[in-house]
Amino acid sequence: MMVAYRDIALADVAGDSGLFLDGDWIETKDQDPNGDVRLIQLADIGVGEYLDRSSRFLTSEKAAELKCTFLQPGDVLIARMPDPLGRACIFPGDPRPSVTAVDVCIVRPDPSEVDAAWLKWAINSARLRAELDRFATGTTRKRISRKNLGKIPLQLPPLSEQRRIAAILDKADAVRRKRQQTFDLADRFLRSAFLDLFGDPVTNPKGWPARKLGKFADIRSGVTKGRKLGDAETIAVPYMRVANVQDGTLDLSDIKEIEIRPDELERFSLRKGDLLLTEGGDPDKLGRGSVWTGEIDPCVHQNHIFSVRIDSTIADPYYLSALISSAYGKRHFLRIGKQTTGIATINKTQLRAFPALLPPVELQRDYAAVVARFGRALDRLMETFETHEKLASTLTQRAFRGEL
Image (cartoon, rainbow, N blue to C red; front, side):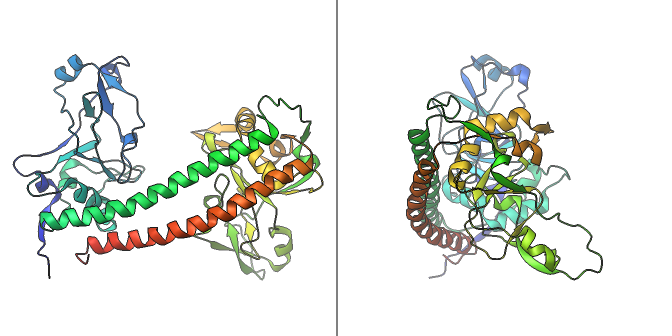
């Protein structure tokens, strides 16, 4: 049976009984850490998920003075600034009275016409994201005004159909959340295993000796992207970008190629067991990296990534990766690294001087075996999650094309 959709603008979902307005202009001087009113900010708004990250407050007297709009559970909050622009979530409520910032649009849909959960998914859909980009302004940091946001076209199905679609997409989203929870648990498990075997490297309670990384590892820079090769013969090979190297994992979903001379292939090619480390990024992610296991052959890396080829009689790459990404490694690189405009970097000399704590290599290999066993189980689980996520993506696209 065909379901009748009608075209409306986003601002129209409020009807006669709802709201469609911006949050309040609340400056730093208006805030009070001891206040009894919660200030919900952009950081609290995720894609379909209320993140509950901020901790800002004001007094109820100041809120009354500023004539603030108080949020209600079920309000849809839309971020008018990235990242990403136009992401939306449902406010679940808070123990304290709550208001929100001016860069957040409050949408309180008419419940007799519009289901809030459906609206959340509609706003976060690829179709509406494209419309949002069309109405956005700004060059360095895009934003969208409430007036332009209100012009975004929606195809509104009957209320019963909205609820059916929202229920399906909520179940699909639950799978995505389970996947993230699994990653978080895996990370905590491996960190716990590391501490059980080696102790906290910050305090080094087991007294492991330290040795400079450059004394037992060959540290190499990669291929410079965009360099001029003139008329030289070149070949295109896959390469690792900074975006591919995460903290403890490799993202191989988007692999690009780079031109090199044939005689450079051996020099730049990665080998199984190489540790890949980024040279810069957000300060809390400085020195993030992962072990290369030969997923792509041949493969090189760009110059913003170091490859660390370790003497296997002295250290294991999985142990070393965990050590560098631990609080011990991050504190060291933050202390010696260069920081400008929120970006921290380390150079090859600084990396060579990293004081690596070295337990017996047999103990390091025990840890690597734990990583390998756990990794195999996690890979199987991730395959299941990826299948569900592809289905969820297809369902979302079909839902807002009227095909679900």
